[in-house]
Image (cartoon, rainbow, N blue to C red; front, side, top):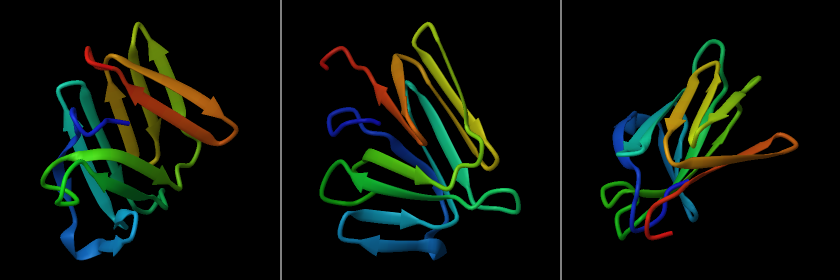
Length: 118
């Protein structure tokens, strides 16, 4: 999603429901990240069985920003891409980013944020 020079910043998460993995942090209940291009919010709940894996943009897995996010468990995601603004909604999940592209391969949706230096 983001990259190391333009990371997403943690805006909310549940510290009691995070597991440290070799590849990053597994958020098993809630995660909200964003930057100047937009925001993503994922919460596990009654209508959603969502988890999110994040990889840090620096030494600390969250507080130097997040370079990459993978969300699993989305049910019936709806993707809308108009004029460089990508929006994704599903039960328990929302994301909207400007200057972005999306690509769908089967059940996998990849959103790439574009920056002037990319």
